[in-house]
Length: 162
Image (cartoon, rainbow, N blue to C red; front, side, top):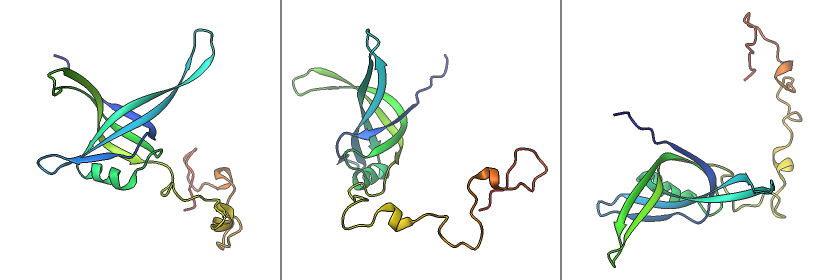
């Protein structure tokens, strides 16, 4: 029998805050829903943007970190596998669930999405950071890598000055 391969990589935004519950063995389980945009075409050739809402389950410490740091709208990258399971409702009806079981969840975007960068009380990005070229580092800061001279004999290898 051939060995199977079940791997999923999703990048999208959370549709709501993570829901965390604990199993009887005190293991954290977080439920997330990731909205993933995709572009398609109608029969008329019109470009349509469509959204898939993918349920994701995260276990253990990673589930607790999701609860602690993720909020609705936050971009994430999820790597895991597809799982199909069944359960019976209280009325005896059999239900099927397809979900992604996450092996890793990478938090994308700004560290603090709730802070407005251009808020009246906080300086703009340009005022806070300034241009690296305006800083006095004691050396000329190159425009791009083509300005960096190579000491290597091999063609195509560049010494990066940091």
